[in-house]
Length: 64
Image (cartoon, rainbow, N blue to C red; front, side):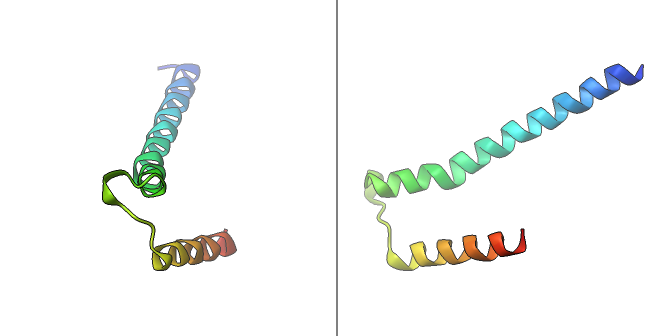
């Protein structure tokens, strides 16, 4: 194949991976947080979970 076609295929693959990572983030982080926030399904936010997640965010932001 010619280089422009290969470049476009690479861009499409990168775009698909970006969308998949956004979907995983939504399902794994945002949805449980929203369920806990609105008390859907008997899920509740506990103080230890909040402090553990904020600690993890601080550690991650330090290394980035």
